[in-house]
Image (cartoon, rainbow, N blue to C red; front, side, top):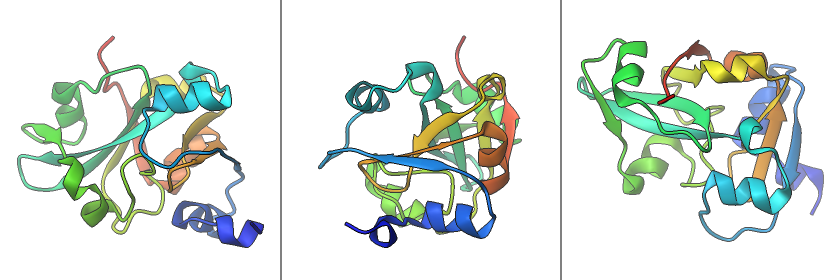
Length: 160
C-alpha cells in the first residue's frame, strides 16, 4: 500500500495546516477499545486518547478527547461547552454526524467542525495518540497541535 492510499481526512488537514505528526497502522477489522488498541501496538496507555461525540440539550454536537482509561464527566463536559447537559451520541449516528466510523473517529477533519474539548491532562504530555480517521490507524502529535487542528480548547472533563 503506498503512502498516498493511507491518507485520511485527518492527515490531509494536518498536512494542509503544516502540523507535524506521525502515524502508525495496525491490523484491525472492527471496532476495539482504545485500551485494546494501545496494548496491540504497545503504546503507553496514558498517552492514548479517545474521541467521544455528544449531543447537547440544544441539539448541537460536541467532541471530547479524553484518556482511554478514563470516563467523560458529562456534567463537566456540559459546563465546558456552556450546555445544560450533554449525552453520548448513539453509535448508529456516528458516521452520519462525523463522517468517521466508530473506532476510527478523530476530532480532526470531521464532516463539520464541532466545538471540541481536550481533557487538560493532555497538556502535561509531549505527545499523544489519537485515532487517525479510520480503524487501524493512530496519529501521534503534540497536544497543542491537536488543539490547533481541531480548533479545540482544554478543560477538566473526566472523573478523577
